[in-house]
Amino acid sequence: MNKLSREVAIIGIGQTKFGENWDLSFRELGIQAGIEAIKDSGIESKVIDALYVGNMSAGLFMDQEHVASMVMEEVGLADRQVPATRVEAADASGALALRQGILDIASGHSNVVIVGGSEKVTDVTSDIASEFIMAGADRAWEGLFGASLPSLFALMARKHMHDFGTTREQLAQVAVKNHYNGARNPIAQFQREIDIDTVINANPIADPLGVFDCFPVSDGAAALVLCDMKTALEYCNDPVKIIGTGQGSDTISISNRKDITTIRSTVKAAERAYEMAGIGPSDIDVAEVHDSYTIAEILAIEDLGFFGKGEGGKAVEDGETALTGSIPINTSGGLKARGHPFGATGIAQINELVLQLRSKADGRQVNNVQKVLAQNLGGTGGTSLVHILEVA
Amino acid sequence: MSVARFWRKQDQRYNLMGTECQVCGRKFFPNKSMCPVCHRKSIGKMNKYQFSGNGIVESYTVVHAGMPQYRSQVPYILAYILLEEGDHILGQIVDCDPEDVDIGKKVEMVFRKLGQEGRSGTIYYGYKFRTIL
Image (tube, rainbow over all chains, first blue to last red; front, side, top):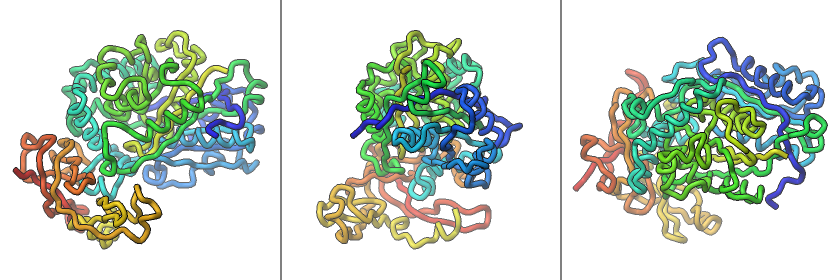
């Protein structure tokens, strides 16, 4: 039951630079990423059967809904009335759009699908953006009582430190590592390395988390071309095959969870993806995980099974997740340094993994990459998606 | 949020009115229409239940950069609290310094102003907590 009815492959990737892209509108961001992906794949746009767009909140950030139609028009596919669908699960919208594309092709309904993610955040001030971000968690039972998104992750961090002895330095090391990787990724928002003192001495946001424990405000878009394996082989010899897709949900509010040191939606999404792929966590060579906050990366590497519960902080401290470690995590720089344009993040993760599989990740390339995994989270874990890829 | 959203009749925001499943006896805050354990057996058997407001701090954070409407209150303490009836709740802890709060501390509910819509807009109220010995 937990298998795709036919094989699905990625044959093209494209992405804008992430950051404060003052000169680019939502439309321009989306089209840049889309054109790059189509160029990379070698397909003609007339073969495109469907388009899925991951977007968290164009309504709040830009007063614009119905963005799938807008993107379709911009890509020049409106004349063929190609079906376009916008997908939303807070900052997991990108990976959820990917999953819809995979299922569409696996079902036999479509052969070639464009999946994109895009977010234009800097049209509003960072003040307002920080309020809108809370829309991905529970506004009525968390936000109204003073919770911001970082404060919810701070509650998880303090509990994790209390229960497992995770240290402030271990949290900080996640940001240090991801900035190191980002400095080796030309499309990353931050290109500078930082040290542990910078993270620990930064302005506090919600203790123990400071400003360097949090993702930045970013604009950006990412896209990829998906198709069935038979079509893929007409365009390239080395398509990337999707061998696992898993999705899980949990309560939108953390106060309705019995344990806040684990993200159950990630645990389940991973179980489902591993089962489909017929592999386990020890088979993964590189992973991109959702480090919206430093604690989120520690929770992710435990919940994905790379390390035991409570051992994530120590693993980061020991360099196990660095480029040269046993399981390099967030080689792109992660949400922390690559940037986090919400709807685009889930696709950007996949793009980085495709580069790693193609051995095209330049200064951050990991040796002998065979199997890779991406984990994308919505809000505090109300939605989680896990995808596993390999070279076909 | 709009005035209507704040003023929608919500007992539970003012006096911790939750629900109890008459099948298994579990108590829920905020109220639930169906028991997530008993599912369809609980339909029509979810009764109102008054929570005591007593609980224990399981985690907390001091918020230094909150959402815009709470910025005048920073730094404030936000906690993940286990209520004595067995469900968790999220709320601010007031009337004390951050140093007085720790995991394991006992708290009780108090009724307070939560915030205000702009300088002269609607004031909205609800529960917060304070530490007890």
